[in-house]
Length: 70
Ligand SMILES: [Zn+2]
Image (tube, rainbow, N blue to C red; front, side, top):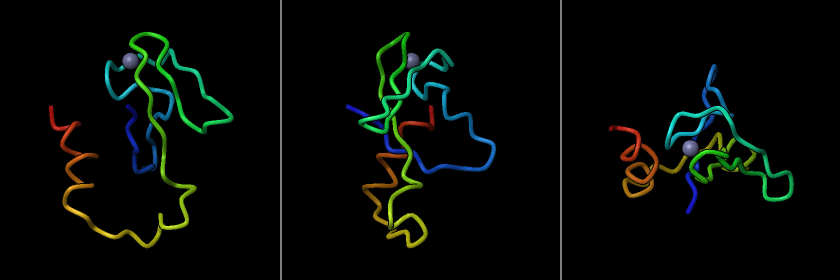
């Protein structure tokens, strides 16, 4: 399981969205981060060609932002 995160100005990409640790490793092949503390994986969608043409899908928004509400 991994999170896809919309990259925002000032965001700390190395910070785990699950546990908050900054002890993470970037997987250069998979283009995602792995938390060294809890094993959570996450990636950013800025390299996605659709990044600037966001198709707002409620389910997608929930999957992205619903997790972060807590
Ligand atoms: Zn973590």
